Image 1 (cartoon, rainbow, N blue to C red):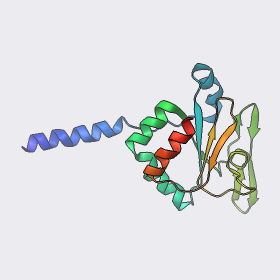
Image 2 (image 1 turned 30 degrees about the vertical axis):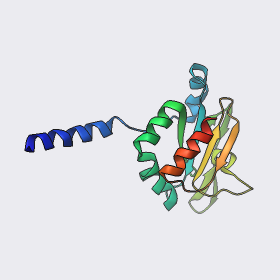
Image 3 (image 1 turned 90 degrees about the vertical axis):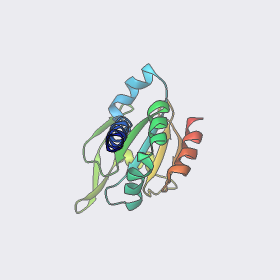
Image 4 (image 1 turned 180 degrees about the vertical axis):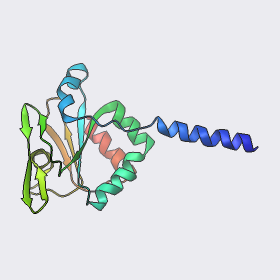
Length: 154
């Protein structure tokens, strides 16, 4: 009985290792779209946002969600306070400081602004032509995110 429990335990650990969410860099999207057209889901977050961190640890660790994101979409994880320049859609987006050790990347502003403001977390869906087709700025649990994916795929 002990060996069986041990085998099941190791199989459980091994199987969870295969189910990882693939995050694509912005710089790779154009070439990937030439190979296979898919909508892009951009998760815009910050390190200090509790709801963002909860989505990362809960929603994006759900195996069903991971499988759907990996197979049906290109997924991009964007820290809004990213300080490196990001090349996307024939443009370079820079970090813009707004105070003492605070700021935002221009790309986060462009993709995450809804009604002239940005509130984290933001989910932005782009079509294969890099056009925004859907934006949503609020925490989504696993069940709600699955519904979001159904809408985003259409």
